[in-house]
Length: 115
Image (spheres, rainbow, N blue to C red):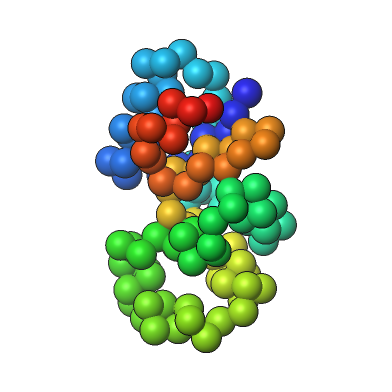
């Protein structure tokens, strides 16, 4: 069973959830705003995803913009970025789909189909 980490009011998360439900994929749901990812979880997901750490940031979020992260991220270390992401789930790009040997960040139907 996969873990589906999302923010229920996010329209992209709603589309991903509908896709999972329509395709009868079992998942364990987690609200990212109520149950923020830890630094250790984010480290593991980053490693499994194969993505640059910057791809884990919700760049369209209000918090990202208010903290001026567009200008700050380039000078931050991975540890600093991970610790920052762990402070608030609204900084994290969503949804996140976590499986045994993969992590998908955001919702792209073709990526979900591959799992």
